[in-house]
Length: 322
Image: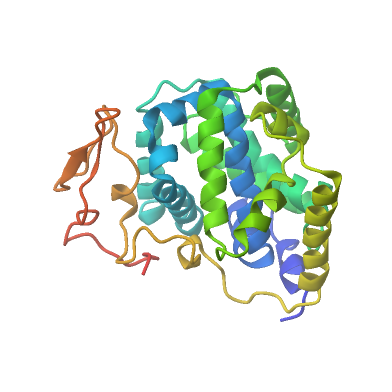
């Protein structure tokens, strides 16, 4: 396969009718590492919205079970992307995500903002920051936008923007209006950064912390009340990622998709998982039949008891974590 063969294939597909296939190729073959970083940063940004950051802190899930929540988020979104919105594993993951969200009082405006981060941040990372081995084309941006518009409709989000430009306007204006420091948002941010740092060998961690914070823009630094990164760290971080992009550009394309379940940093389900049985089960959230659970003392919600993530009849086919 030639380096630009996947790009050329994408441009034979329709940006609306084939948006799921195009987004799968972009996310799992053309830019698997970059998309992981961009979408991770997208979710991270949401902590700076007080209503989101405080809610996540109040559940204690993102501060006390950060690894599990990281894994659940990646795997649920992966199963939706891999298997689609139709009957089967993808729909089960979508239903599980909606069950969790609907257990809380989340405004449509916050839903829209979170959705906008998924549309905007890959373009910012790859094109605006220049961290991608190539730029996304307008055709690819339109297809990725259409994919997340479809996801938003399945989440029953109202007033979804039509175009990338409209999403960017929503994204930008919402952050300018709502970003602010809260103790809860800062706590969730700290826990997430510590998890990211833990993915690296211990001897690298003193360097990874300032490197990572140097990638945060001024809005995030201010919202989380972090010290301003030095100009040297800003240049080192940006330069390292741009150098990586030049190296990746000269590498052969990935012929097989890289799915979230293949990520060595996802470790919560070594024996496999069912998308309908991962995640949290707070009050009011349906608990799957047959699952043994235990109460969370902080919230009164329930989660699967240790060793009872799966029932014997649950199928691990169709992309289960091994």
